[in-house]
Length: 78
Length: 222
Image (tube, one colour):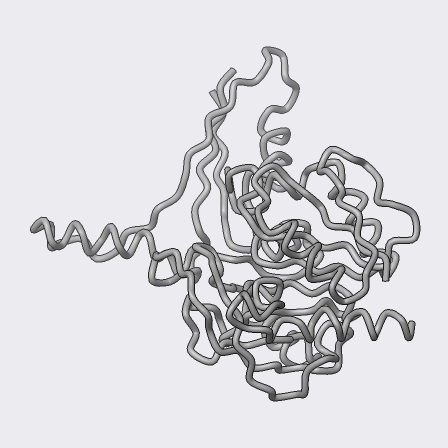
C-alpha cells in the first residue's frame, strides 16, 4: 500500500525558495505566474494490512514528517 | 559546572563548544547521539552547530528523534540548563523545547560573517556576563536561521523577556530580528550566532567568551 504525504509551508509563512522560482519563471518569459509555493512530497510503502493507514500516516506527520509550527500536510492513501 | 556536549553525525562545532566551556572552568563530557543517558550530575547540556544527519527532512528533525534527545528533553523538563547553538537551536525547536522554527534565510544564501547583536535580556544565566542593551559581535554561519513564530508567540516572547539576542542588521529575515531566545524558565537558550567561535583572540573576536564565563558563574551560584 502506498501513501503520499505532501508537506507545504503554511499560508502566511514566507517561502523564499518559491519566490526565487517565481522570479526565475518571470525571467524565462512566464509572466503570468503570480505566486509559487514550494513543498515536498514523501512517498511511503506501507505493509499490507496496516489498519487505518490514514490515521497512522497522519501520526507520522505530526511526530516527524512535518513541523506543524511552519508546515501543513496532506495525506493520500493508495 | 558539569557540562555535556552532544555529538551527532554531522556536528562540527562540538569541539569548539567543549573548548569554550573548559576555558570557563567547566568539566566537559562528550556524549554520542546513540547514548540514551546523560552523565550523572550534569548541569548544562550543549547542543552544537553543524549539519546533524545532513539536514535531511528538516534541519534538526532527525537529531530530535535520536536516543540522546529523549534524555535531553528529560534534563530540560526537570529544570536543567541547555544551550543550543545554530543547528543546536534548530534541534531545540524541533524538540519543542523552544517555540518557533528556523526557516531558510530570506535571501536564500548561506551567510558566514560576523554580525552585530544586541543583548536584549541580560537577566538570564546565559547572558549574565553581558549588560542589557550591550552590542556584541559574533559570527553566524547558517542557511536556515530565519526565525519564525506566530504573532501570539512573538508577543509572549517579547513580553516575558524571552528574547535574549537580536540582530543589529537582520541578515536572514528573522521575525523581530530575533537571533536567540530562552525558554519560559530561562534555562534553555537557543541562538543562531556562534559564541564559541568568538572565545579566543585567535578567533578574531572574544565577545562570545562572556556567555560561557557568565553561565559558569551563574551556575556556581545555583
